[in-house]
Amino acid sequence: MAGKTIKIFFTDLKSYFDSGKYIFLFNLLERLTFFAFYISIARYVEQQTYGFIVSVFALTNIIATIFDFGIPFYIQRESATNEDAKLSLYYSILIKLISILVLLPIPFLYFGLGTEHWIIIIVSLINFFSPVNQVLIFYLNGKYLFKENFRAILSARIPYLIFLIVATVLKINFYFSLTFILFSLIVQNLILSKIAECNYFDLTKVRVNLSSIISLLKKSLPFGLGIIFGMVYDRVDVLIIQKFLSNESVAIYSAAYSIYRNSSILSGIFLSKFYNDCSKYFLINRKIDLNTFLVNLRILVCLSITLILIFNLFGDFLIQLFFTSRFIYSAQVLGIVSFAIPFIFLNNLTGVALNAIHKEKITMISTFIGMIVNISFNLYLIPKIGIFGAVISTIITEWIILVIQLCAIVFFNRIKKNV
Image (cartoon, rainbow, N blue to C red):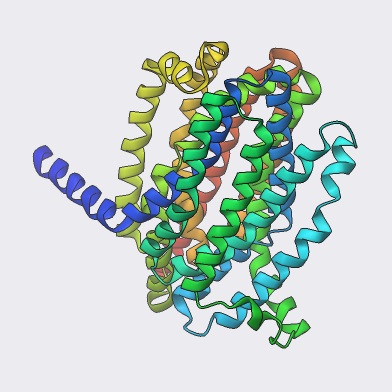
């Protein structure tokens, strides 16, 4: 019986990997771009500068997410279930392009004008232009064009990764590495636009209907608020560490956190396709595809346990491999924060399931609660026990969000059974 169960498990795993391999490879390359950038500059810039760059990325990520409005997730669901989603796509791109000009001054209000102003400008452009690509990526994901999305990012990122190798060896000024990221995003955008048959010249011909734009924003806003709250609790710890401790502490913490957080790309193998399939299933049956949900849950639990073992047994090796021995203290942080992986994997699954069945408001409420809990614990623990306070806050936050979302799914499923 046990042998049969294991065989079924690995059959499911292979089936999902075959269908989701391009999602995994896309997410791997996307994460690798920034991970490789951090590894590159960590080897030759001062920890003070490194910590400041991480802080600027954290702040601008939060700002970009606040003004994301949840449009990418809404576009993917529309693209998967509605053949006539092109007008919404055009409206979404227009909103994103206009928002870039509005958002650029905000980071200067936080950090102020100083010798690092070029870092703020380039990082802001990177994080404020990236959401334009996200709209196109999620639109194509809704059409199951995962392979095309991967080819686009592959064409844009491989030249950049080659440049990073050269930059690391020759210790080229990190400003060039930052600028090259922006250039690769623009190249990716041009490729995606062609695949999506979205001509930017056609944007000037689109009749801007204000009521339609407002309607789009109203529908996408619950997605957006959920993402905002998630991004805030995911990034705010870095800003609190910088304020209460130092840029050097940010560097130590972020080295471990980047490895931990990038492990979540493994869940992407399953979740993007699950989102499409679950959305279509709900459209027909008006309930959760529970069998598919449980298959994904079992796989994600096994993956997360494996990662906990790897990060605790080989944490020293991984930190020295990627960040050099200067960051060896990060290995302790990595070992502890890895215990949040099962929670983050599973609340990604429950969040996607709730979004697919049009219960995105529950996702929004749960991430809001998580954000409040995270900020509160960070403000209390970081001044007392340093960066390990941020680690404990992360574990507690992910656990609370999972409990809330899982209870909502169980409650919703019971209601449907009784109808």
